[in-house]
Image (tube, rainbow, N blue to C red):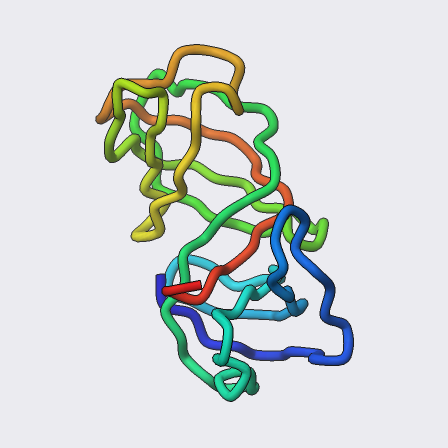
Length: 143
């Protein structure tokens, strides 16, 4: 996913739980969505930490809520809910692995999930789903 950093406050960094990496609150824009998230940089990549920079990131999230399978195709959505870092998601399941991992394409952004997060068997590739994610983080490629 390619994003442009609209706003960043380097003074408000915090350690990402379970890691030694720092996360920085950002406002971002991409083809699929615009909103707030936490940007996680690779070691030595602080020089890329500036407003207006366009970077490649992997989206991750802290939790999933309100997961549902949809009975028909709907346009893909990745839209802020109004709570910082939380997004409404609608999309098509792009892949499903036997281990329970699956990816949802929400308009060109593929979000990776696991069936443990949704409390049921992972949907099959091609199914349409809707849910909310909380705690969106954007990991600089290679971080």
